Structures are given as structure tokens and as C-alpha cells.
Length: 106
Image 1 (cartoon, rainbow, N blue to C red):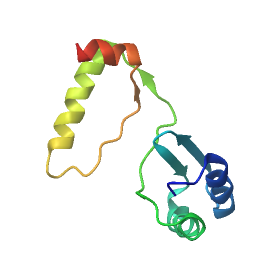
Image 2 (cartoon, rainbow, N blue to C red):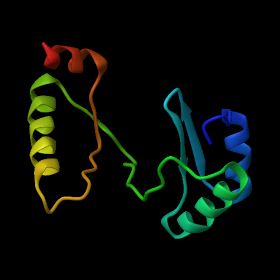
Image 3 (cartoon, one colour):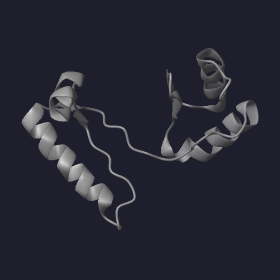
């Protein structure tokens, strides 16, 4: 759905039974219950064409803001987990501000 604008995607997603749509410059993220994933994906594909990516993931209900020290530690842990052969995906509920990310990049 490269050419689809946010309103078009939102309308198609609602008709497909999705719970929410998050649109950005990078594309559209369609949120749905796990049990509705396949039916929503098929309806969206029929309405807008094949997606660039479709997968089941986890979104936290509550996020935790981290300072630079805790963010650094958590990012090292995430890198270590992602590098492990037996790990397929890593999800977390941390919120790292742009200021902290800039500080860590220095």
C-alpha cells in the first residue's frame, strides 16, 4: 500500500476489523487482536494490495521512561538478546527520549 494515504488505510482497516492504525512517514501500522490477524491481513491485502510486511508483535500497555544510564544498560541487553541465534524478536516497554538517545550517541 505504498500509494495509500492515511485516510484510505484507516477506512480499509476499520472495514477489515482492525483496532487502530498508526500512520507515519515510514508507512502504516495496523493494530488488531492476535486472533483477528489473518482475517484483517487478508482484507487489507484485498483492498490495498500486498503489504510490505505483516507480522504479529506485542505492544505494551504501559511504558517506562528511562534515563541515560538505564537506557544504556537496557540497549546493551536488547543488542545481546537480538544477537542470540535462538531469539526471534525482542519487545520492551521502555520509552527513551530523543535527548537521551542523542546523549548516548555521543
